[in-house]
Length: 392
Image (cartoon, rainbow, N blue to C red):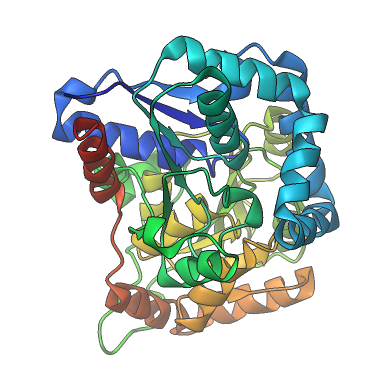
């Protein structure tokens, strides 16, 4: 008998929502009987309004002050049980209302892409005597924080052997860990417009993509950067883009400001489109796949979803910062495999962009990314989740 599946996440940036949506869409495509599976922003859906706002606001504070996030990582990894206890005190409304909301939904299987939601699901199962399995997916491709390792979870999904080894070292039962590739939505790979069509819509001149053959050539035209400030539009990216413009570096830039519409509106009136550095400002977008196709290099914070969109589209990445220790392995993996670069200052960034615009490094990085053969795990994870639901 097929049991009801619910999928839990928190809309904090894009790192929890994007993979959950990717898996749900694959479930619906593979078996239409799962098309109605709900993706639930648990704090919002349960009416935990104060904690919902605080969760989002706290992430924004951490993006602006990364040391807060890194200090939190240290505590979560050193004392995970104490960190879970503290989070239950700080977000008491969320834990209570979230558990009641899960009880009322009466699921047969809970899939969670957020550590607090996984713990709340485990609490609800114990408190209300419910019978369902819990699958928790760690959203960091090469790491797993201690807060994810609630041993009441039935299956922990991770995206790499590196993450699996860390979970085992932190004493999560090895037999309950499953390794499947990081999920990016299959729709991301459906390109309905050409590179030149997207560039024309943005007001950019046609430019052929940089080739990635065995003998890479120098850029055939102006280098195009896709700079993203993340889903929340925070961090150092605005300063980096402003410095490019002030230094008159001859490149095209597509700058995505995310949900920070105030920033997007401010910048639209700042940059002269005829300047040597041609900048096109975007707000929140739903066509990152097209923007990547229209670009040569991605410039981003080391968040998991953005990193893997770059890797899977074979777009080399310039990393400008990382908010938490669990993001740093994304930089290490990409740079270590020759698919990107990490800059620690605006001066380094400007020097790197000038160098990339003149040489063959971008083409060489593209070739290395193609050689990795990475693929999305959305269908594999979807098939696993549906199999678990049918076996209940």
